[in-house]
Length: 284
Image (cartoon, rainbow, N blue to C red):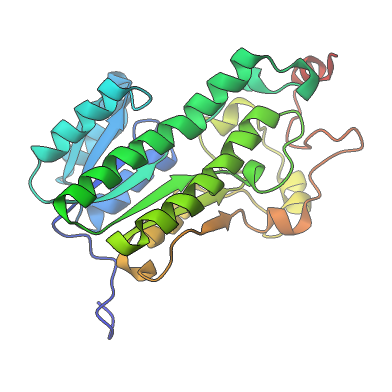
């Protein structure tokens, strides 16, 4: 507790983490929020992921409630809210982690299909918006204040060569965040986002190899981030430590955006070392 009474304490508060089961940023947010005193409703559509990554947190005595639900559907959102209503504490927060993009979604903009575009927007924008809508509606109905944090990406803050649908969807998360923040400000509901740079997670390891020299060249701080560093920024925006911040997107990238030197002569990312991958995205 600080002299002003503002703290990281989340005691008695329910925080929904959508996309908590992947073992990366979402799982880390769930753990840190629970350690700060929150009851975390940890949402994943994959029961095995919850068993692997969330059940051990509960086994450590943390207040974590696993919920199998597909947050990209109305039924899934209804399942989450039903569990929230049956959980002790008051609803306070939502963290939208669910999203991402498979390696196969990297391609030239000339090759993107409507199906590709819509799938990435559904995963990275629609899911976050409709979860945010549902939680903010619940908060307003109960006369409660709260905090919503969504995950954008550095790809949504700058150019995203050969990943245009993902980058544009993540840019739309920033716009969504700003607009919802204005609409909900007088209700005492804050809406913010973080935009991670290259972070060491299981998902990123699908297409980012180990190259410390490249990392030192491309990133001002000389290394990739960790899930804990992304989760720390999210927890800051979620908590009362940021009680006078809304509508903002915090870039958490170790200074990658400051240098923006990770594109090679062919304008493909230096992080993509797999030659078969490069060949696939270079096809017309």
